[in-house]
Length: 69
Picture 1 (tube, helix red, strand yellow):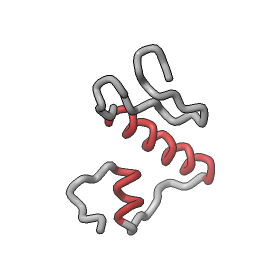
Picture 2 (cartoon, helix red, strand yellow):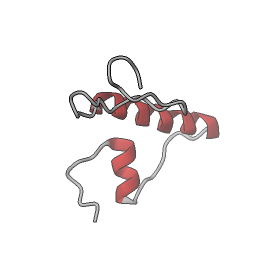
Picture 3 (cartoon, one colour):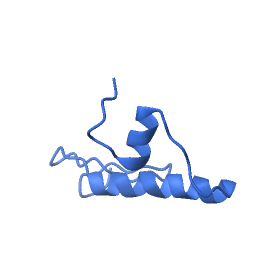
Picture 4 (cartoon, helix red, strand yellow):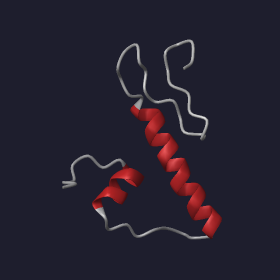
């Protein structure tokens, strides 16, 4: 745990949970997920991706108005 109360992640994931406030840094989480999607698209030399599973769409786009279950 970092001195400021945030969890540290050795896997490269952002520390998005602050134990002192109990809040999640959603901006950091969105940026991390978007960076991962973009990096994978570049690695595979894809111009884009067609996502149809609501869970994948939510991960990649942070869509909140979509029913997941």
